[in-house]
Length: 328
Image 1 (cartoon, rainbow, N blue to C red):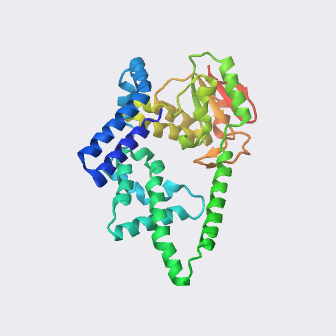
Image 2: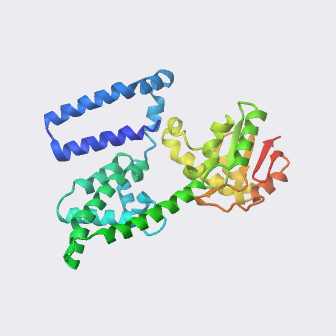
Image 3: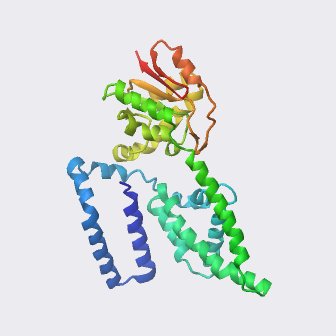
């Protein structure tokens, strides 16, 4: 379902052909491989087109944040590796890219540029491939020979032990944090209650206060677990909103900021979104906040207090973790 994957595959294949082959034989081999992939995976695309036409693909093709300026996102190299402490892998990758450029070997550095031009929105994920290759080059061709020359010894075990301990610790810390960014049992219970006690055609505003929708398990899981429509869930709207996807995402993020504001903020931002809703689902103490671990000690939020005193809303569900209001 992640249609950006074939975009990256095609872009990298074309890039490799231009940089390393530029032969008719290589082109024909690439076409044969592409036809084989289409034969295997084309059934999924055919089913989507049969049911929905080409509109979803036209929509999603406009959500990649394409721009020539997107290549400058590479400057924020920490965004690629997402290392919580010292960006060791990012640093080794940048040093590798610089070393390759000095030797006029541009294949790996330009691959990173090509990836960011092909699909800027998700390039920070695939971009780790050439970055890792550059880091490996720097270690093998620059760092190890330099250490051997300084110490007059080819024993490199201490280097890899230190690097291994650091990288392992960094990865474990990241993984343990990620393990806590989950939907709590009270949240799942509340969503099941929604499934069993609200009309199927109901529309919800789902608010957690997290202004990064791609890290928020509450808004992401609500439609699947409750089987109700969530106006504030971003995931999946790429197939529907086309070039309005970015605007919709920013509006949803702005609405999330109202969790700790009053009713004026909530009213203003819902009017900006301009979509009708029947219920408001509020997560009192979600696990995440802007992709980090959140304060889970909240007992209420400013918006909940405001809705409790608003005559047009009625509280129909309340636990320590979730409050649900219905429009009267």
